[in-house]
Length: 369
Image (cartoon, rainbow, N blue to C red; front, side):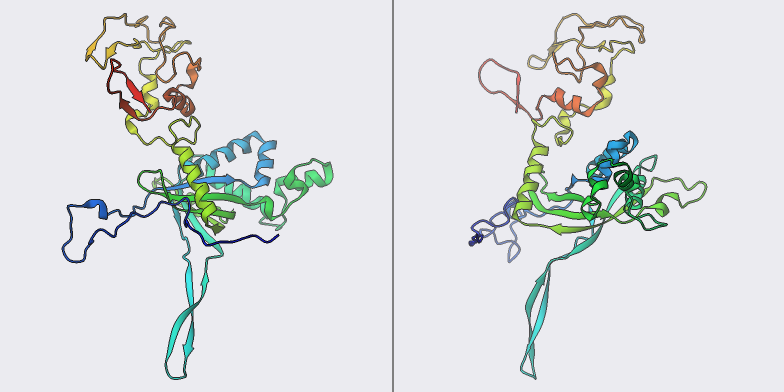
C-alpha cells in the first residue's frame, strides 16, 4: 500500500515557534527601545547530548567484566553531563546550474543537499585514570586491531566460534554492533523549548587522544582538555524534533526523581555539603542540629522546642535517632549513607522545585508546584 502524503499544516513540529513581529517597526526609522518584545533574539549556549544507544560489543564486554561495566557507565555519564557542545555541524547547501543564451547567463538552484557522514568534535575534560581515552582505546582496538587489522571485539568473536559463548556481537559481528546513537539539541533560555535537534546515527569515535594527554614536560601542570572526534550521520525532521522535545520536558519535569533530572532553580538545590552539617561521626549519623519547626517562617520567630544536640563528643554515637536527616524525606526510610547521592537529593525534593506562596485562607505554608 502506498503511503499517502499531504501538505503540512504545521511545520517544524516540536521546535520553538518564532514570535509574531509584524506589529513592530524594528530598526527601520525610529527604533522603539521601550518595547523589548520585538527583541526576541536567539541565544546560543544551551546544548544537550543524550546517548540513545551504545555499541552492542561494548555492552557485551561490560556484561563479562565489572571493570569495563563501570568504565562504560561513567563514560556515558560524562558524555551526557559534562557536554559543552559540538563543533563542525555542516550546513544545508544549494548548488546552482547555469542558464545561458551564449552571451549572458544566470545561475539558478538545481540541487539542494544535506551533509552525508560528518566529522564532529565534542570537548571534555579528561578524568584522572584516563577514563575517556581508555574507552576510546578499548573501542577502536576492538573494532580493528592496530597491528593485525583484525576485528576481534576483545575475544567476543572467538568466544562464539570456539567456545559457543553466545553474545549478540560475538555471534553476528558487523558495523551494526559498533555504533553509538546520540540525540543532540539546543534549547531556548528557559530550557523548555527546543530550538533545533539532530539525531546522530552510525556514530563512531575516530581517535585516541594520546597527544593531548601524555605529551608534556616537568612542571607543565594543567588540566587535560580533550577534543573527542566522532563520525556520524546527522538526521533532522519533525519526528526527531518531537522526540527531543519529549526528552527535554522529561528532564525538566519537577516530578522527575531520576538522575536525568535538570534542576534549574538554584534556590531549591540541596548542596551535597550541607548534608554533612551537624552530622555525627557515629553509626547512626543523625543531625545534631535538627529541630523540626524550630523556626516559623510565617511568624518570623523561633519556637521553644527541645533542640536535639545529643552528646558533645562529635565522634560519639549518642545523637538522637529521632533527628531527621537534611536530605532524607520524613518517613522515607532512606539510609543515611545515601545523603550525598544525587538520587536521594532528588527524592528529598519530592518533585518540588518552585515555591509559590498560598494566598487566601489561614494556611500560610508554601504550596510548591
